[in-house]
Amino acid sequence: MGVVTHDIIIQPLPHSDLGRVKEIDRSEEIEVVYTYAAGELLAQSRPHHSPTFTDEMWTEMMGHWQEALDKDGLLLGALDGEKLAGFTILRPRLQGTMAQLMALYISRPYRRMGVAQQLFDELQTQAIASGATALYVSATETGSAVGFYLKQGFRPTDIPHPALFALEPDDIHMVKSLVEVR
Image 1 (cartoon, helix red, strand yellow):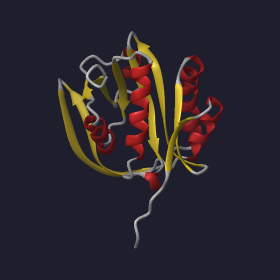
Image 2 (tube, rainbow, N blue to C red):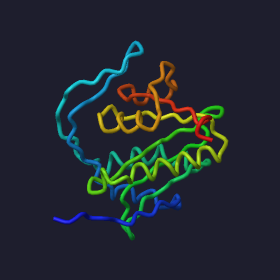
Image 3 (cartoon, rainbow, N blue to C red):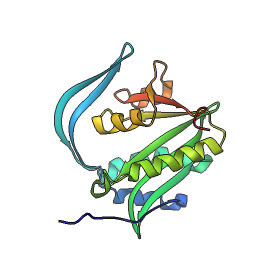
Image 4 (tube, one colour):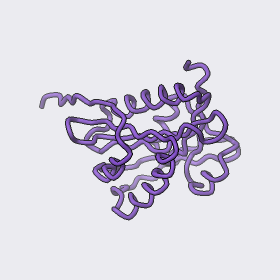
């Protein structure tokens, strides 16, 4: 069987394209989940299947994202021709000079192909251009998500953003300094 290659284009999408996120198959076979308490990141084996989101779940999340996009947020898409392979959302001003990576989803057929890295690199570039000196993410506690963000230089924070922590208490709240990236 040959290697399948895709010419993925990373580009800003109009905010009116937010509904396209429902094209993403975010289902995943999860082996490991993380918890963070008392300054310690702990991995636990918890194999299970996580299905793709329902329309209702996507719609609820899109409501949160739309608020940020209506202010000064940025929606970036990873396009394989006309197909949406993944997307990310940047909120340039979470607080002070800290930006927020609000969402990063890659459709199942496009995982492990560097698409998340391409989207993250562009989001980070845009965050720096907006004047951000740090980037915050509330990462799903799965091994794949936490592992990806650790590889990007994020570290768990002992001082999570209160509103985001209240919204997603099981997530691993992480921060990355952008000062050395400049």
